[in-house]
Image (tube, rainbow, N blue to C red):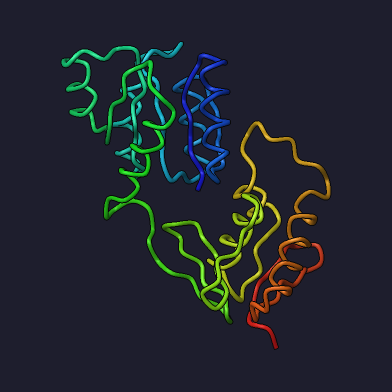
Length: 224
């Protein structure tokens, strides 16, 4: 899942990004409302973590604008303004949750899981191909009922390919799903992830194949 983190305090942003990445999420960090709006124009997000006191204004002002554009990703407001009136203002503006600083990372993760469980948010479909089953809700792959232990980026590659099973997924789309703004992408990094994932699927007798489409990207399909 891709998360947009709107936080201008570098140490806080780095700590939050590290925690989220440790839970299989891709994180795009931006420091202003303007940068957040640009990110929302080019990327889809499963959730938005939004600070209020930003260099170019109150983060709450972003919420009505993104809702007007049809962006339905849940928003959790993170702020030092934790008085009752501030919390009410945030929720009335359209935030899905409101968390006052300082807070424990564990609480943020729990609140994030809670908003993603709501019916209109995180997709809960089961993707199946061959002997492979992938739960979008739990971000878990299994073969014939046996759970596979996959590194975060290989899991993200797998989900992206499965969502377009039988169709070619462009390299750019895969890189967007796997890497955040701050991640350094080596020239052959994506190919390495795909190669390792392909080997793990073969070793598990998943009954699927990942094919490279020269000059375009990759596709996954049932093994012949």
